[in-house]
Length: 101
Image 1 (cartoon, rainbow, N blue to C red):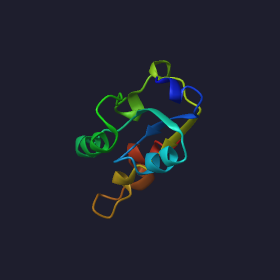
Image 2: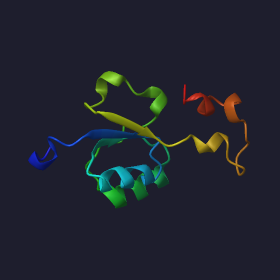
Image 3: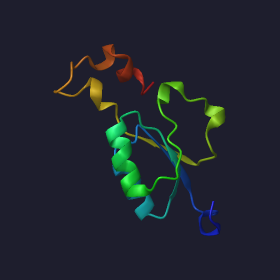
């Protein structure tokens, strides 16, 4: 981590999408240490915004917490696929809808 980022509050971005939540926190001076996103198109856009170097930890349901870097704050996008009007709208009956627990 660069010297100018050592004392910043560190966060990790789960269910990151294209990084909308990250924009706000970075604008406040916080430092992102990694992200989790399973949609390849969203990841491609995320990397266009924030660079290619960061690790994508992939499927949130498969992450081993011991593999994560140290962070002070966790942010997460809501799992919209299961609630979206363009999907099957299974909501909490879909495994992805349970991820918030």
